Length: 195
Length: 294
Ligand code: SF4
Image (cartoon, rainbow over all chains, first blue to last red; front, side, top):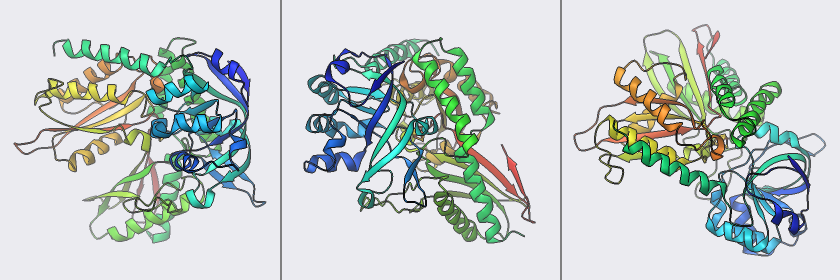
């Protein structure tokens, strides 16, 4: 697996293709439905520096707060990305993101956005909350915790060797489309077979 | 004694077990899947990560998945037991388990969008009750994830587009369609709980109840046992694989139940459970002594 440091340069991102396994090290941010809407309502200056060149992780973590006030990720797997389809391409462009981490893949609007802005869709293993939480070394800060609650807040985290797979790239390649097309052919075959 | 505290303590432990440990039959099915997938494939890599995750969660007594799901329980109780007390005890246990981080605060007020903060909400947890002749109280719990709940579906036969008529071949056709529609989105490889018949409420209730069956059991109704075997074979030929990365391990189990129906309707209801097939069960005798079940 290739190891990559965050923030990412555009050339590196444009070089990576569907099927590549990657380990990420550096600073990223989490965000899901409420965060994506909020990021588009206005330009959120306070959050922008944490997003430029980095990736947004579709994750609603389980978080523990220690007595000294610091936070720790107890569980941190990806959530379904397609819910952000209406917002994702615009969020990528507006904040200069180089990638999105999630599960299940995204649609054509995001795929076009990845090509235009130079960003990747990175698939984490859904439900692998502990393996992924272990890769989160530190919680730096959190935005909108009061307003959105723990799962929907924007958590700024430092990760080390965070494992993901490239399933959508900047050349309009999508493993999700490939697998879906193949499974539909198989379905046709299985439904044609006599009972 | 079966006091409220005894119930609450037992249910907290029940939730902890469900959230942090997978049942042995599910672990075995995941291991078999890993061995089946080609070396170096994304499918195998995904299953390796999943199994590492299962080990780690158990060792740390921490949630297997961060979406700790909706707690759904089936409670069997002897005559004279207070259902209200059982329900209150489960609600309190959910709050306590959330405070202990066995569960994530996972309930959102639908109108305001605000998290309730303590893991409980309207219809969360959700309990089914049944009075029985035994002297003990038995509770079977699943934690039903949101991503996989979203790919659950109810078909109405006949379905012209899929050429599915009102028979078991029609059922086979819509079930395979549902697996293709789901792709990897319900965190494949999943387990399907299916109900043939019933109405729009009882169908989903029974399809979820089918998820309580151990993966290796055989359906006592011969034609349903055949259907389950055929569906397993077909579904794993679809090539969707773990996480939808492609591969041979698309489903870990398929369990089919039947309810009677009205002449006018023929529903096929499918509940999709992700690989994090979290279930746990306990039986409490009248003295309050707990026996943990598989
Ligand atoms: S579908 Fe299951 S494994 Fe996937 S994120 Fe939801 S609860 Fe976790």
